[in-house]
Length: 442
Image 1: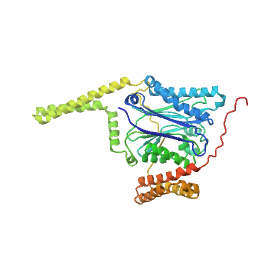
Image 2: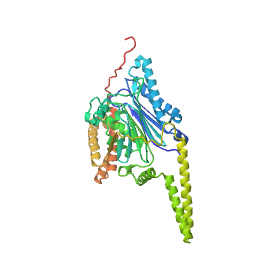
Image 3: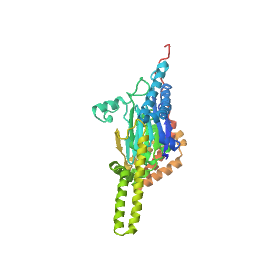
């Protein structure tokens, strides 16, 4: 059966840069066979090395990595296919730099998410990130291959404690060297309502994880991508910004307050299954019900004995069918994934976010600043749909009065977006492009 998901991706040059060196690719499975065999594949890459050089590297990464993964997943399993996909992409990008002096410095980050029946796999090189949003938590699934994160790891401290110390210095990427070490995380279990985000540092340098979590809980992927990019640009837009969102069906706004009864029931079922696999549980209950049927028959209570016998027969058949499925799944398990060897679930950062008065007030303040900036410019004043803005601002104030914080935040954030769209379009690029290579013969 096909796992139908909702996904969207968007990339933007930002406010300061003159060229976009980010790239992304969305390749959801089109049918049940493709889903069971390959899964859904998504990737984000942030190129480096100057215009044309960075673009070439990132575009090649998002094109080659999914193709190589799909080509080798059946024979080599998830771990082998992910590693091969990244290493072959690295070799190809490296060779471009070797064979073309004008492409000296060619490189890119690469963060790929593979959503498959057994869980979510992440392949990662560089400082682009992957997050999982579940309920009111946003969890970073990748380690930044940057100088500041490596120093923090060695000192056993939070990277934020080092401030901006060599923040943008990448120590691992695709292309600069002949060999590359690839982080492979997973399989991460996924649940109904889970949302996954992959993004370049152009987003995370400007927008906090808590803000990202709130936006992804309130809006569908297509809208959330646009809104997050506009917000990053309002905050400065110092780099290219790329955002790719994948949402598993289920959940929704209620996830801000609770995971929901169905999700809790799923978790309980999984916990029980880890203790006693469900086929054995069904067989045990079937045997117990059969014994009750025999007892009732011996006592002459045929009215209950026959239904008990039928229930026991169904439970035993379900248990036997479950054993057959588990045996079949084990025999079909791709090489490279040992179901008996659990893999560590690495959460490099785990944030709890709450949608309350503080978050609403933060964007009310941002809104006021944007209103002033737009009113001060004749050009911007004419570009803003003030009627739509006023309706949303009034709704936000009304919801605040009723302490309906999710609705108040959504209305205020929608109002901010109306102003941001006009404001960001009016800003002028101030990057002077300077290639970082020397032309042959110079």
